[in-house]
Amino acid sequence: MRMNDRISLRIFVIYTYVLFWILFAITGLLVYLKAPEIAITVMKNVDAWTSTFVLIILFKKTVSAGNFWEFSKKAISKSNIPGISDPHAAAGHNRHLFNFPADTTQK
Image (cartoon, rainbow, N blue to C red; front, top):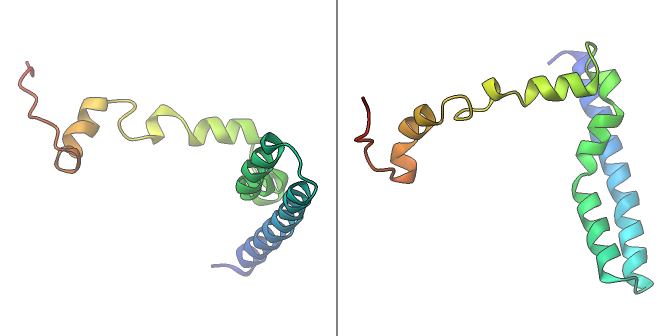
């Protein structure tokens, strides 16, 4: 791992912890003030997504090419997810994990 990568990773971890504790404190404040349950639940979910928010905030510093939406589309394209482009191939590959019956309809 290069020194620049270590610094970027360290910054990501620090930002994640700082943002998480801020959001956690806000959630605790809502509990203390007896806010509606829906507000507390929403804040819990926002807390869980902290690392994603930090990744979005630091995206320009961590990924030099393109914008966030292009990067996301490329990362989640059909060709990068096994079984989406050819579900039968994925089912055959993982047949032993899920106990799929043998496919007798093959031509």
